Image: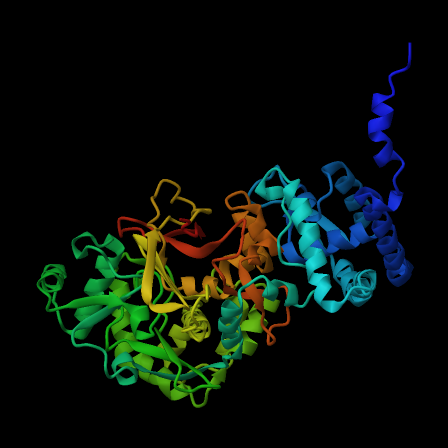
Length: 556
């Protein structure tokens, strides 16, 4: 009886073929080459490529739990434990118990760890560049794309997938993933030079504002009979300030009979925070593009600190009083203090480099903007500047609106040029059709609530501050704000705390120090997460701000 050689015969072509035709062999050889090049560049510090990746992930994410860190670096938790032990013994990392969940230990860089990264960054980048230097420049992003495609095809869920933004490419690979038309919009965005140029009543800066018109955040309301209660409270305050109505009944009656109008603020180049309603008498900020001075955006002056600010929608009498003081006294004082344009790109960069996401956290940017508004000789204005710790947020909103709006008018461009929530719907406009609102049902922010507010219901996404997130800050930049990431972890998709959050954005800004921050929201790009970092406004209009979180982007 002859032996059965079927199996041997059928496998001969593979078994006897050249080893260099096998993908696994080539991948292993390429890994050996990169490891050797990394050792040549960084060997003196006794840091391996995976150790460097862990340090880099900690620098990007801030304090993070071991599970999230292991996913970010794509190694199993057992190996991660060994690596963390080695890094801790060398004093490069530190670990502490999370303030929000004592079962979780968070890992972060020490000063020695940060210094080690500073020492290695240039050398590690050189090792990566040497690995692929034999390829033509135009082929290098494609190699990254193909490797990412293979990895993602073998990842069973979104959390295991590799973000599409390639590292160390200075944004060139990311830019190539957007259409030519969208790239044109993005290039207009990064050409904007925003500056705070004026403080005055809105009607002085927008003399063509229609008569008896108040402006609200987000897209138009479908039914004025069903306004969210926080919006009604703010509408009443604005109508009273203008002298158009004495109380709620009169204001709503005029709204219904058409003698009072409520329109989307962004249709008039105005952006307004949360539930705040703007009228012509409200003192407002002007942000101008110094590269094209006819381009301007406006935002009302920040209406003061918690808990009674009118933007929070509770309509508290103290909020009404401050609104009148801003109009009658503080606004004119601030206008006098603004003696020359204030460049804003350096302030945005300073904030991002010092723990701000520029939406939920603005402390560093606030500190910098305050240097342009020294304490006034007027006690009331000084008290306002000292207490309004989000004074700069309205300025950032106007700058963000100006920057994304510059990309308008490019046919076939998928870049978002306006964005906001009205408490019922999220609306946005695309560069290809900048006059048309695209609307979807809005979701409330998901995140931690303040103590005592756990049972309160959050209103659906509200506020024009969504333009900050459409620019690329806010939710996409949460990893830059450790004070937020600690409390948000466990509430939001883990990719918000990695570079993957910027996958749907087009490219970096030359004026920003961190080239991993991508700007310009391209809705045609794949993504694992996309949202808006917002304050939670309590739905019934009684409690004001009840927490903070990320409102997910409405998907079709």
